[in-house]
Each structure stands twice: as C-alpha cells, then as structure tokens.
Image (cartoon, rainbow, N blue to C red; front, top):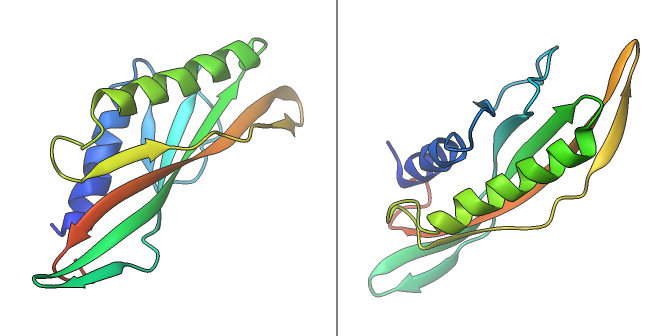
Length: 139
C-alpha cells in the first residue's frame, strides 16, 4: 500500500473505534441510517505539496472529509454526541500510530435535510487535515 492509502485506511480504522457507529469509505448514503448515526469517509484532496530537496520529500496537508449523518427524533443530541466522539478519537491518536505527522479536524457545518415520509436527517461534512510526507507524489 502507498503511504497515502495506509494513512486513509488508518483514519477509517480510527473512526471505527467510535462505538455503535458504522464507518463506510467512499460509499453512497444507504437508505437507512442506524440509530447512533453513520460516518462515510471520503478520501478528499491531497492538495499541492511543499517540497524539500535534501532529501527529496513532498509534504502534504491532505484534506479528507467525514460525512456524519444521523436520523431520528433526537437527532440534535445524537449529532452532537457523534461529533464529540469523532473529536475524542482523533485527539487520542493524532499521528495514526505514527503513520502521519499530525491530524486535525475542523468544525462541522450541520444542515437539516428533509426526508419524504420519514424523520429528517441531520448531516455535516467534518474536514480532517492529514499532515504527512512522502518521497514520491504518486505514493
């Protein structure tokens, strides 16, 4: 696996430590959202790297995204708990076991989405910045 894929897989595994909340990677939103919510990790964009020449290294601030979705009558409380759990998981392992230099989440911007014939959804994208370096921009 490339360093980028290793880091994204480690982030997905870290998110899976949040109890009772399934984590998908690159999937479409399923028809049913579990009671505790759902997270979908999007690989995002690595952006333009900074480069050092001796030794040659490409330094990325890769922007991945976590789509957090909850549904139900108490969705505001459930959503707040889900976001707090994501923050706690990231704070517990800011280097993904030494796989990257640093990870940090940005504040979500929640929206309420109506669903015809069902309780509405509360959803947000939580940007996660992954700081890492590689010897090859294709890695």
